[in-house]
Length: 172
Image 1 (cartoon, rainbow, N blue to C red):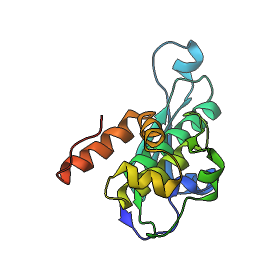
Image 2 (image 1 turned 90 degrees about the vertical axis):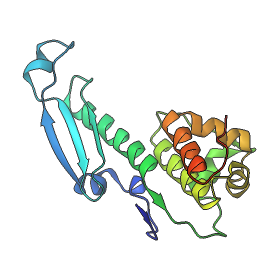
Image 3 (image 1 turned 45 degrees about the vertical axis):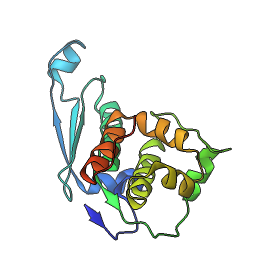
Image 4 (image 1 turned 90 degrees about the horizontal axis):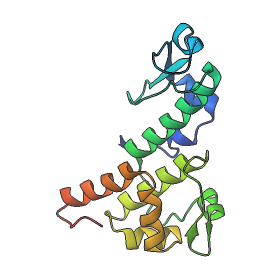
């Protein structure tokens, strides 16, 4: 979904994001004891506007699996959806708060990660897949941006696929 919407779905509150989702509770087999096999602790979320799906079943409770599924849905949305950014737009306040001395400081499991990933991919897209230009817009180094994108291999792969489609050489 390329669009001119000003807010990426990963930035929505959990309640607002879940309101856009179909939630399915189910059982999953495997290790974890009788609770896992007898109780519907697995969660499958389907984002209605996009069809993007995420699920979690490895935790013992439905609440824990819902939290994990929401996080995975946010990452999947960050990977799949691009929001058009204004050419002169600088980094968001969240990005600035996580970029210290040109280094991106965030753990891949932190709630901010999907939001920052979406922003980075939006800026890379707006910079014609040139990580040097994108890093200048984001206020970090190209190597830091590359390292950040490699945290989720799918993100780095997506950048390289878009570069290939544009006739550019992939990054290493």
